[in-house]
Length: 247
Length: 241
Image (spheres, each protein chain N blue to C red):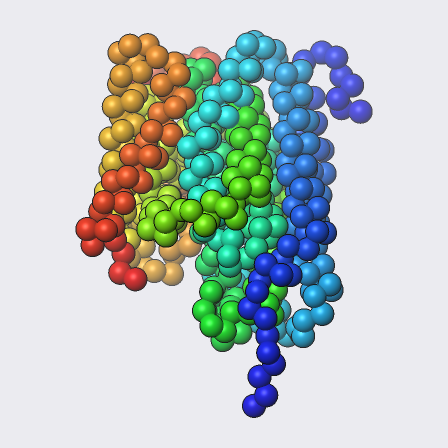
């Protein structure tokens, strides 16, 4: 069988200037959305008894709180650069995807071409097919959100009219259940995962107790960053002590 | 135009965020999806629609259910405005929701109130800016250099443990923000039963595990609520104690 000499240099096609322009456009759209939303919050916050100072404080707290997660995500995204090239990583991880979903999708798609992600068979053709599958899957998420949100909104408005108390009890319970379930999904994966969850939880608990005892507002905002760092450091030692998931 | 209204109102907020949320999310959708097609056109690689179809089906088989489950799970938490932010930026559980929770805890509002919705929206905007800056700076600008100096042992640990390292802390902070003893016990108990008992017994339900836990918790919290101390203001119902 004739095997076409296929280039395995992903960067050669992934760094097309046009793709860089697309990546910048994606971030432009995110910033545009945030600006429009912030303006809507500033204009209408008064209707919910929220002061301008509180709007600023909420924006700042959200920004500070996301520094830890953003650095962690950036670190994972950097590890993906040799596989996908810079503009595709920016678009896939920067937009709807998370690093974990994109890696899993890419290896599923590469598998249908008889290639392992980053393996000897992983060439430009496999890369473009994988990127295509990842992008179409990401599109599925976004289209579904575009269709379902207005439908859910009508449903919740109706529910709110019928039973306002139900709608006010829903979000808090739903949020905690979602995070409890997501956290517990991590536990059976390995002892290393359990240690990461526990270390992160303990650092957060200590931070919050200290923040409350000494009345330190900044510590409440930075607590998540410390918790992530604590979780990853503990996981590092656990992982290389052989407590990680079976490869 | 919705933005031209002068008096602050929740209706104006919802109108602006729904209209512009739909527009911006659609723009993101078109730009992101066009990328592989442009690569295909400009690289003259020998690729067929059949290959793309098979590859997409392999991904869809695993993630297709999430297209519906994730909006269903996050809508009660994010509200309509936040949905357009979340499904544009992604990273919902590891970045956007934690940002909203921290901001609600800093301002001192409980989830479910109207004010908490505004706090969450502003917080996600703040998180979006940090997200964009961190991606452009550390991945776009410095990425190639950073990848050459970061030891594999560190990126490996970050890749495997990023999610548990975030979730442990966020869950604790959330419990502290809610200050809702009964609700906490119900949510933790239901999640443990669904994820650690039901899912291993019935692996079929595993993609919907979180959604099932969320729905069951909502029902139980409602059924087991404190009836005799019913407050007059329904906005305070989230705090049971």
